[in-house]
Every structure is written in structure tokens, then in C-alpha cells.
Image 1 (cartoon, rainbow, N blue to C red):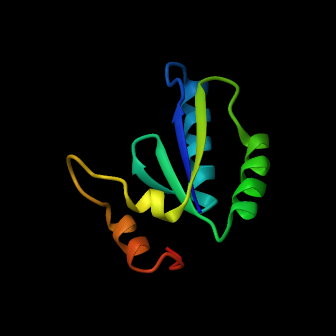
Image 2 (tube, rainbow, N blue to C red):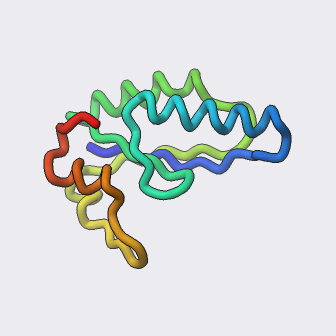
Amino acid sequence: MRVLVFFDLPVITKKDRYEYSLFRKKLIEKGYIMLQYSVYSKLFNNRDAAVKHISSMKTDLPKKGSIRIMMLTEKQYSSMEILVGGKSRQEEMITIDPFILL
């Protein structure tokens, strides 16, 4: 099971930039990898673990902006097409062995 987090947070004021940076750092600390700017992904063993993680994330959300979460099966995720660019180094490593820790 994959969880994708999409976010669009304001970066106008100094406080906004701080909250953006804090949210992004928390995602990375929790094991998310960046797919694109403001799109992060994390692999889970099963749906229950993903649901539990999502409910715990709700306590760390910034007050402003837009944050969306989507759960995908590994089959759905692997059928994603890259139209321009390519996979990041992290994505390549995860694709080889999904349980490798970076």
C-alpha cells in the first residue's frame, strides 16, 4: 500500500515559510520520499498500517493551505506513467527493493 501526500502551503510570510519547512521535514522524518515538489510517497505493509498512520498525521497539520492524502495499491502505483523526466535515485532504490531503508 502506498500513501501519497499532496500539499500546497503558503510561503508568503516568514511564519508561512517556517510552517511549510516544518511540515516537509516531518514528512521526511516519517519516511516519505519526494516524487515531485509538494508530492511525497511512503510505502506501508498493509492498508491498516496506512490508515493508522494517516490518522496520526492529522495532529501535525499546518493551519493554512491545502493537504490531500491518497492511498494506492502497489499495482496502481506501479502503473503510474512518467511523461517527462524520470525516477529519482530514491525511487529507483525503492522500486528495486520496496523494503529498503534509506
